[in-house]
Image 1 (cartoon, each protein chain N blue to C red):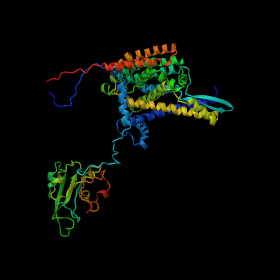
Image 2: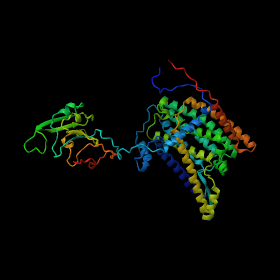
Image 3: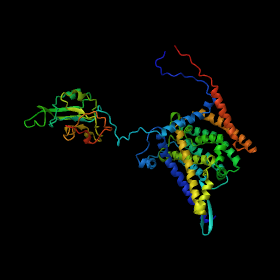
Image 4: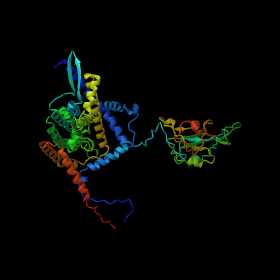
Length: 388
Length: 188
């Protein structure tokens, strides 16, 4: 490979890595701020202007706390757990296409390099592979702690992740069928025009994917691996200092990656309405290279706008909904989402056969009609005779 | 038997499909929380902004002087008797010749101490005093202390300064508890 391409690729990878870490760091701050605002409070505002240095203060505290390893724990696995969680979380951000491509001329050669850490044809498979490894971080941590509560929390995490991964994959399959490719960039490219964004063609798949993404990130209302009421702290009961910080940090990176994937797979990625018109106008007025690069920068900003909205959405949901009960969670995963996503696949296939992209709206409409009918026919509230 | 009219009928009726789908309820909940996101925050930024606690607030103790600067306290000990926490102690002394501009009557408190660790700010000393000599300021709190030997307040910290006289007025214009002396300076 050309050295220039290698260098530019390296810079892109570093920038994406840095952005991922930065966003994950500031998500902790944003979470506290959003939580406070939703609860009519003000939130952190002491460290720095508006409390902006709060994540740095938190990190400092994490580093200086006592790093404690239980005497009965298996030491190396105990250390490996948070590393695995962090590693898988970071790895999954590498196939996100952040924007179209940057163009430049160097030594009279024209280069065009996509803004993506690694451009591979099996991006979706890769992401599923890496994300499903993420449960090892929790599992190893829970096992190595040598603590019943941690082990129970880890097992709960594993079963939850497995049951949601199936529905996640099945809801994705409908998109893969429509695109005919496993590359994330191809899926994004498919959604060039606004009404072909997958959220409009796959409404049911979107709801399933969104919910499963919440469960995959182990975020409220699906944060059952950690559960103060019945499990003390869950899989990270025995963890302290930066090892705990890694687990929490991995959750925020997962949240960022999930947001990026929701916006890439269902909300057109870096596409926005009239993107091609804006792009060609810029190229006309600024010249081919500068105009194209500016258009790419705009795409980058648009994509991050979508990501930030979904990160906000994750927090918004967290401070709205209470935690599920474990049997409800399992029912939702196995008895609701898996059948629904299979139905979604079947209807999408039928739609493709008859060349009708919006076929899955039929399921949504049928469900809405059924729901309205059931409300209309709802029996009057049973009157319980009062004790006299 | 009904004790209150606030009791709620409970029933375990079967959920309708719309309720079983959770989504309408979830959207409703999200709408409620996002409304709160944009609501004005009721938080008061305490150390910077102080709320006016009203004219009946009981704060820092003060031993009053009269208009000519003479101490009103005659060391009768009624405040110490009234004090449920036994925080007040004093030593009485007799006024000498030439001290008439310092003490109002023949007897005065040579030592007057309040133990702030014991004081519960009940205001009974204020009520017991027949000479209107001891008050709890409505506008100033006892400052935070770090050392144990700072907590016994003697006369040097209790007797009011003539340039910072205390009067209690129900002033509706005062919104926050003022910390500057100028805001509470008496008109006399």
